[in-house]
Amino acid sequence: MEAAALQASIKTAYEQERWSEVIELVSQTNWQNEALLPFEALALVEALFYMSEFEEFAYTYSKLFVDFYGNVEEKSAFEAVIGKYYVWKGDNEMSEDNFSEAIDFYELALPYLESLSEWIKKVDSKLKTAKKDLKASQEKAEELEIERFKIEVETKARVEKAEAEKAAYLAQTIEDMGGLGKSIVKKLNDNGIVTLGDLSETSDFQLDQIEGIGEVTLSQIKAFKSKNNL
Image (cartoon, rainbow, N blue to C red):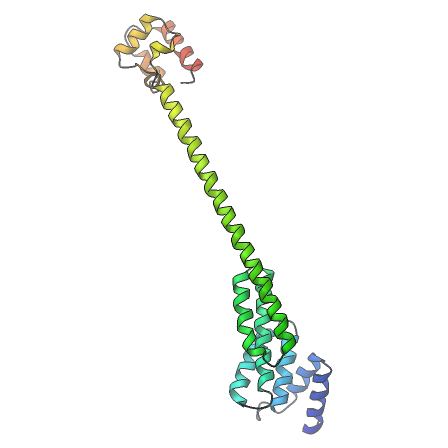
């Protein structure tokens, strides 16, 4: 296809938004030996942007073309593709509830979209939504943190109370608790086993080693320990 006819075909396909055809036609130009015309380059990056999975290429090439062509008529359109890319990135972050990152991309987009008033309106709306959602997310996170802290405090208080109650319980003397004969209590006390805590820390084997504690007495002590959860 002659150059003039090819250029006309690219222009028609671009105006009709036949993006895959635009890419195919641009590939038929002599781009390996001659730079694309600005309108051909613009058609290419627009087509890449609107073709799914090629947005990154559209962004990269647009930045290159802005630097390469300088102040050509198409410059603002190249910049608009860059802005659209940032909007696309922001939308992806919003879909993942990454509101802060979405806001950053939307704000990056605005300077590049000066030639597209409708896009600016869209981005302004997206920014408001993202900021609103970010605030709500932060407030929710704060509420959860407060709730988590309350639970931790309450749990710690319950544990400390339970430990204090257990310590007070174990501090009681075997004699005050009752349930064992005086002779048994005396034998235990004479061997340093005075409180319930002392008894809970003394194994059956150790009790069996105490002089004067036989099988019957040991059985009574075991029953006492079991009854009092020692």
